[in-house]
Image (tube, rainbow, N blue to C red; front, side):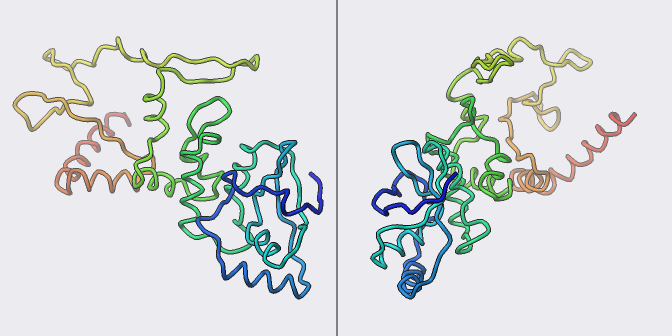
Length: 254
């Protein structure tokens, strides 16, 4: 990491590293006026991949310097790829500059979900909600809610839709793929007395004959899981479900 004065024309801003939903023209104008009057601003942050300097933090300062007819800007230069630059930009402006809006946070999350350069980890696997939240400096429930509202595939769905294996790094540092398509395929369903197979996809009461049900995907957060159940099945069903769950839990405690 070094601090340099870079030519504005040598800095690229079109690599997907803009962390905000939009640039505030009012802020740019305010900064530009201050620069003309001699104000000194903190250095911007760029990543250099050996050929290109990618701006990741300081877009308002960059545009203000251009508007103030400046040719150079002070920059903290990190060595790294465009992928490194994008991942770094996701948490830019968390503790300085203009306060991030919800739209800014959503853009950061969307970038990690859909930008091909950063949509997977080093092993090629989709990020978990918690890891996206950590990198974007938001709460993991924010990520989960955004996934549902936007219709973006979850990590599990994305993995099953894209392949029947999961990539991982071996202890020797090489890449390999774990075949997951056949897991549980030959596993027999648990049978209860009377010879009728019990399965989580089939109801055990309320129907004259078992009928296959669609699996309900619930978030890991109990608060949102409870809301999802209430929304899907209604209060009466959930009250009955609580009784059944209580009875089941008594068996686990013994």
